[in-house]
Image 1 (cartoon, rainbow, N blue to C red):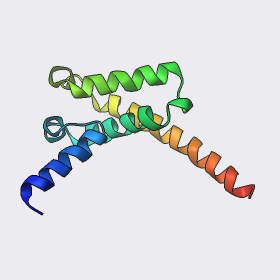
Image 2: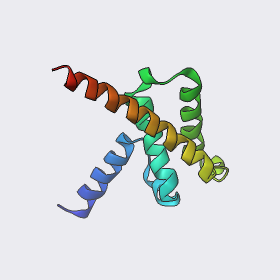
Image 3: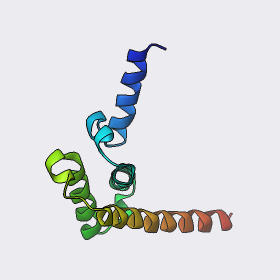
Length: 103
């Protein structure tokens, strides 16, 4: 595989996960992880979120995508998104476990 194909695949994967190459390079790992969690929650688990949680996640994604507002993000913002992701993940796992117990 040549470098161009690998870079193109990387760019496509980042795009599918709600990021672009420039912001991925410029951000700390904590903020990238929170951005990925927020994107996946909005994309796959919207039914488990209420309106305020959706607004919080969308707000984080907007701030993380803009270079000027990215500077205003604090680690506390990222931890809030990550704890929300953990709560939703626990709810999903409990539902999955209840389905498997009933079989």
